[in-house]
Image (cartoon, rainbow, N blue to C red):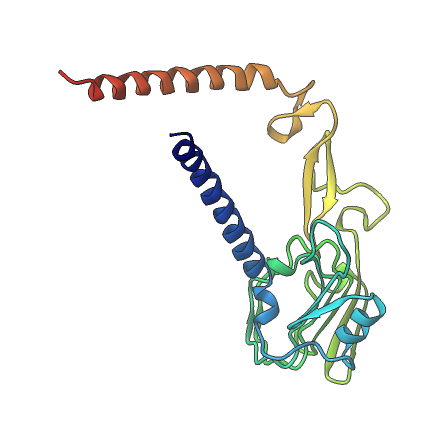
Length: 233
């Protein structure tokens, strides 16, 4: 009997372990799908290849990954999608940590305005010469066209381009860059609510205590109802 009980307790644990392993594995594969958008691998003689070598990175398909033992081993620092026959660029969010992206030698006709939203670390891009830098020239320190390509270098801080705080965020809030020409606003300390108009700390207890109590009461009622239905007549 003890052995059976031990097995019955072990089975759920094993199932949970298997589920976690499968989920983590699928998450990693999904995270690196952007590296397989084009066949081949990053070449040493390319811009991304030289950057990866100087950064002591690791090549994975069309990506350069940060080569360290951190909790995020799949951290993308470079993405080379040059000469991939791309006509549209819409979703590269899996590479939002990239410092360098090469999209040259592609017949690109359109790049979504939100394609590089959240790319706060992006500092160098290579595009076909007919494609403008994300956010426009004013979003970059240096824009240069040469050898059929457009080079966008040094992403500017959208919140502080003129040496003053951005006027796009409401009063009592702070502005933070969120990719070329993008920004996000967050309430300053001691402010919260709609447009950060309420002063004082967020009332966690007043908000979540009634929610927790109501959830408990509803769960208890549902449990009692199901128990009554399950009791034999």
